[in-house]
Length: 499
Image (cartoon, rainbow, N blue to C red; front, side, top):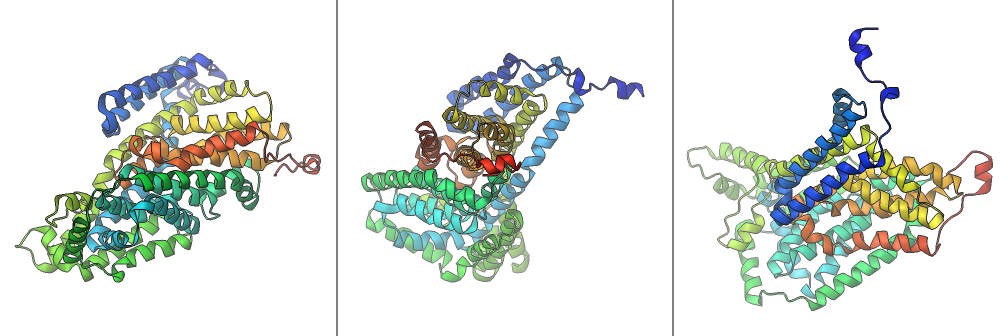
């Protein structure tokens, strides 16, 4: 054996981390993130949170070195963790391009134009939630809903003088309800696969916690809508509609890019190519129906029109669109998009995944989970603990997929040992890991929603009623032992442990 090979620490040389080892990076991160929010408020995700995550990762590395892990091992853990988020990062960049071309094409202005005429301010938040729920249920993607309907609904609420924070909360609530209950959703397929059950048993079992949660959310949004004070008067709405009509010439034909995305998503095409094709459809619509706007956007009379067209579409994809309607509020609303707008979000995700990767590869995360399991005394405490662990995993690992897979894999044996059907575990994973992911600013989902909707995670968090309520409803069911399925004894005897 070579000297280089013999110098590498083997698993037997690794010291088992103590609970104190595991908690030091977590508490350090909590303190630094709290300081970042205190000092920078909603701007903390623009750099302060990233530094906190990197420093916490460094602290975890020091503990890893102490326990016999080499830099190469921890680096591989970081690379593996970031690799999990690669798909999300690609989608983020593509959504940035989609937003830029859809505004330039008039697709988003058209959705705002018709939405302002159809949606009643009194029931706007409720309608947002229901609309996003139905679409997400049909296509199985909360991200696609937020990146298409979501940006238009935020624009409509702003034009109506409604609270965009509440609107974002309603969009996310509806989108995650539909995503969670759709058999086409990746998380809805992942959770039962990890737990060891089939997807339709999983969905049926989820209805007991998910339906009451969305009903509570809808009641909340209805109350907020009826008590809201929409500031614009009729003339202001008319002026906004006139500006949209004059600048973008809204029409149903400009909704073609939206139909393309919804069709491809419904056909279960992966998210990244779906969004890219939606971006190209937006660029085609801009070229065909907004030629003058594209030329005006470039502001370069020295270029041939066809060259200016290509340059304008190119700019919209990488740097977004800047509106020039003459109305300051409307211009601010429609000046968005571009891959460059997602760079800060990607930075945040990379730092978060680095921290999660070090915590996992050095065994610190596993040590925390093992300690938590020691407090489990019965069925209720096991399910409530599962919910808490998944929420904690969302915070520490910054990715909903890891928050489903890691706790699910570790807790599956415990559910079987206590003769509980796998649907109890799969439901608990979704009631916690899936729905709370957009509530964590540095989680891939929280970062995506904030960047796409243009509303800080901390700002919309209090209004994401469905996402906040669902874990509590699930824990309440567990506490009172309601709809907790036992494991079929015949499946234990045959070695089949699916519920």
